[in-house]
Length: 231
Length: 231
Image (tube, rainbow over all chains, first blue to last red; front, side, top):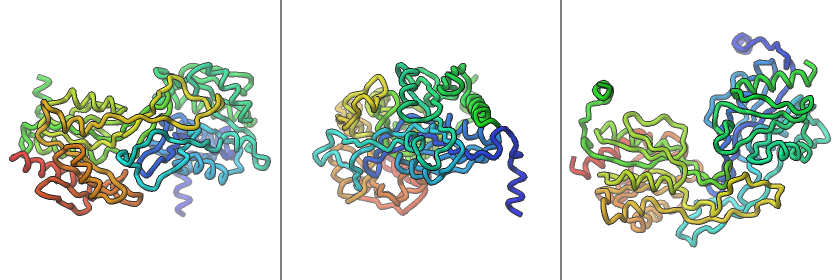
């Protein structure tokens, strides 16, 4: 009865992505240094949440694996909340198989080699450097699965120089099918703002989209995914 | 006329802190590593914002120097928004003199020695460590001013072990008048939550307060400040 009532509140599951399972990562990761400090990044999560909401509106079953953000959950999506890159990878692997995987999160490439249990005290000799180790590469891990690889794996490339060149080499290196490339230089709209301007590499050649709202870009990507899946 | 209309929306400026100017820092600082990455900390800003609102309710003229948080500005307070410890210090110095200075922000002790203009690329040889340099010490700078030192300088000590011992030595080292000490160990209420449990060192001896909401602690501190200023 409760399920019936909930069903009535949800939009009818029609649309081009009906019956498709989509897993999408969103937001930053926080890599702890000690109980209070972390290395983070400026991802607001807005673009990932907008894509998740748009795919849901297009009829997909959507799970968002989200780093720490201060946004309301996108309507109708299942949420898995994580902090670190390692937690994000584990959550994504647990959610496989899916039809589509979208790696929109700004995952920290590195984490502190050592996480101390107590707050590091300045007066105890101080800290002169943080040793780093590489985090797992979530996009490459999912794109290179031998079993249960999603049919369509989409990455994002946030770059500050030679945006398309870096994005193209990232697509090859990671083995994903599409890369959504954007320019995150200071003063550009992407970071933290409500608009985005991207080029989608791999979708029917490269497709450069005009500046639009993150919500509109979500709808556009949902439509492109529907077309690619033959929906 | 606009000022008159605004005046009517504000609470009557009565209360024990009437006519007092209070500057309070709140939230974390973010210390950039490159255009997208930073070193941050888990301060939500809730306690600082609650103290600011309480001091305002008690009649003070309050300016909040706030790091990046996702909270609405406390009602009736002037806001100065900053990112880094150096920006926070500069903003506080510009606001001197004041009757009271409250250093509630979780200021990063260290920042990356080098901030690169372009995003650091993993594939260009990678990053094995972040070199750090010490940030200015805002509490000590303000507490040790020879001219225009606020009459009452209050610091906060977020500790994970030997809380009172560390807080007491911090009070001496910084030269502040009171220290509000709390335990930020994982599982304790302070970090990110709505409650806090603190000991105020320096106020009529040490005063250990019971667990209470951050709003209630704000009102309690506003009352203690009123008493100390003879209001």
